[in-house]
Length: 317
Ligand SMILES: Cc1cc2nc3c(=O)[nH]c(=O)nc-3n(C[C@H](O)[C@H](O)[C@H](O)COP(=O)(O)OP(=O)(O)OC[C@H]3O[C@@H](n4cnc5c(N)ncnc54)[C@H](O)[C@@H]3O)c2cc1C
Image (cartoon, rainbow, N blue to C red; front, side):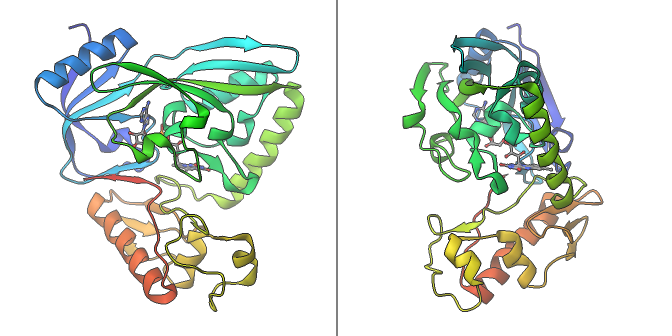
């Protein structure tokens, strides 16, 4: 087999959280679709489970590590599939860092992705979790027209956006067993001027800098509580401000803050003082430290508000 498979690799350096004590039994950077098929066949023969890691910016593994194969897609291609005077359709490899694609599109004057500037990770990870910037009310699923993916046997399938069930931080991939591997994503972008895009990007980056804490994290830990995802009706909740009830969205950070948890520490992890929906690894946190804070926030919010906080990050046991 051509692919290089490494053994007993520390997981923390692969994650933006930099947290956790565990190792992956196997780790492989896959350089092509053909190589991916080979590696999947190899894993299949040994009955190994696998996990596809993008940029590792929305995931945490338990301190036990992962007794299987962590795969990283390292083939990066951007192709134009169709275009006219106003729009361009791109086919992009899932392992491509989102930042690289955003910068390439800005240079070309192709608008749409500029709203996602500053979101770490890869194109595949963004599609899996339907990443977005809530303040702009847009998510990457709004631009996706189709996805090519494969299953554990390397069998490929194409699906149009209508069959990908995009909703707030959710997609068909997230709702289905995680052995589906996103290979390529088709996006529809609008042609405009680079200048217009760069101005928008600058504005977004300025707001992000004001709101997003620095340090090792995985972004927002919990989903905001919305009318659609909440198990409880909060329309008349006496403790929730009218503005949130009218919008139908209660920010998870606000709920955690109301429970007095900003700045709360456990081991090397703490709930950010700047934005309570972020947990920061400030001193070699274990996954257990972070998980403790996750459970604490969920329990306190449930007790005070009767509302459930659902994870936005993925915690791999
Ligand atoms: C500082 C900071 C700021 C952030 N800001 C935002 C924000 O504004 N908006 C937002 O939405 N998110 C934000 N995030 C979270 C994160 O960046 C996004 O969720 C991102 O899209 C995750 O992409 P990734 O490639 O890192 O995925 P990973 O964390 O590597 O993986 C996340 C999930 O996607 C799956 N996955 C990844 N690639 C594939 C693939 N090719 N096929 C199948 N499954 C795959 C993984 O198996 C895993 O289940 C932020 C994170 C940080 C650290």
